[in-house]
Amino acid sequence: MRSAVSLVVLLIATLAMPSVAVAQDRPALRAHHVTLSVGVLSSGGYDLGAETAELRGNAFGTSPPPFTLFTADSHLTRATAPEFRAGFALTRALAVEFGASLAHPRIGVSIAGDAEAPAQELFGEELEQYQFDVGVTWQLPIPMGARMAPFVTAGGGHLRQLHEDRTLAETGQVYYAGGGARYWLRGGSATSKAIGVRGDVRVSLRRKGIDFEDKMRGYPTVSIALFFGL
View 1 (cartoon, helix red, strand yellow):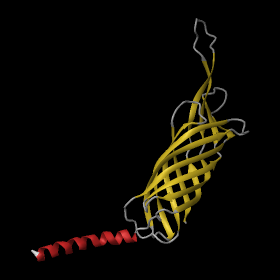
View 2 (spheres, rainbow, N blue to C red):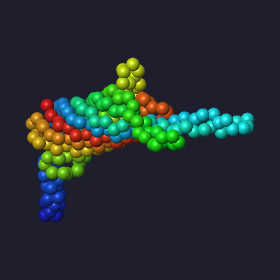
View 3 (cartoon, rainbow, N blue to C red):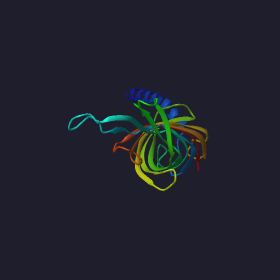
């Protein structure tokens, strides 16, 4: 009986050894410490709504059909912006983050259906767009070596858009979810400070702000940054 118990204990220990080794090799955040990230954020464009310019028809009848002059399809262009994030690690895997970015997208207008002119793309005013958000990141328990670790993230925040002459401001909300990975150039243990590279891919949803329709707009965002663990 004793030999059987010893065999079971030895088997469990043998199976656990790779997991322990992976856990020791896997980098992580320092619990109860701050991590700062500075990088570049690229946001995709999205539609703002379409309008049709019409004239009242002059045909005979009580309600002649309108005559279409042209259609205008508006959209917000893609933009690249500096991004700053500050995170506080609740555990070695879970952190709360605060982010801020400043972008300058343009309102683009596609003109089509004009009988007197070809289809054309017009670039309108340049916006000044601020975003402040709060979210969480959770490092996944997936081994990717001694320096890299994947994570998932989700959050939301406040959007403020200023027109070109700063005479009118529009506000809205932004929600996002996605994932990414951290690569430690130095650190990653429970005792040492860290320096590394971080990449994020998110799907963002924007509510309100500058828009010609009352709709929720979706667009992708990609970011890359240097992070510093204090």
